[in-house]
Image: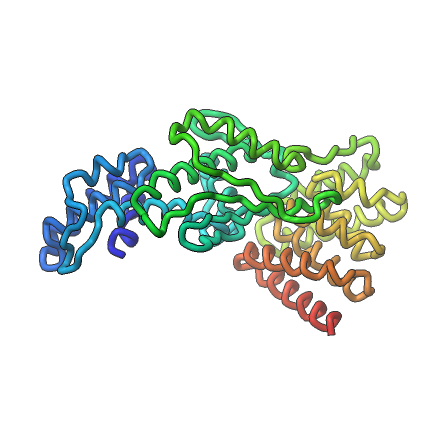
Length: 390
């Protein structure tokens, strides 16, 4: 437990080399607390902490210790503990670790963005049974196909970055499995939920990372196979050309996206005004709602949500579900929740749609931060859902 608590304390000095920084910082803490830390115990803890870095050779780092050592009066296995902490650190990567609203508030550096978004795509991790497999449950967004990230001086797609991370985690699974005995897992699986808006993809699809080489340079083959296994992820929907949407609507969409105000209320007021103008154009000129949904523009999605709120239609729930995953601002999410409320009130929601809406509301609520207006609107919409289901 001490190793788990202390393994990342060195991050206060920077991410790079933080495992070694953590080990040195622990030694400094131990010197000032000699009643709690024996020198031998400190050395074991330092080795375990260093070993949570994938750049450290676990066997070499722990070679000075016997298979079993005495630690605070208890028999411990240093290599076993080091492997357990290392694998646990790799598996501590799901949406709970990297909230989207925290990312926005913290102004996360661009270099860290793909690591946050990787965690946000992981719904949860199932360890299954001993000697079984580890399953990562992932949900991607349609925008991921066009998401380009920078990693180790390379410019790659986010999907390839995601697959590279999974390949690395699989290598760590294999390496640590040598020391974990009955706790080892013989496979790593990624279960990907169907992409919203892809009609032919109905059920979760699984890719298996099995044992292979531990050489990172050999990851390209398994990464390519992962991407080929989910061709829908790498096929972004076609974006309609601006000429298919009235120029004035395109201009207003840009105005919506460019709104910047001193206060949240002023920001909302300005955007609400633009949304009303966009709705008037969309309705009067009978702009295709499917074109708005496919546009991927935040302003045009706001126009879609406003149009649905003003004049709901039977197929609108599919359009909202498809676009919800790429909504960025709290204002746009508020507009989408409003539109869902109208569809519920008008009885235009199918029974199977409620689970999708529940998930979207849960995602929006997690990302709402201190936006009370959005949080209250979500609560009210949940109340509508409960009434509709009775």
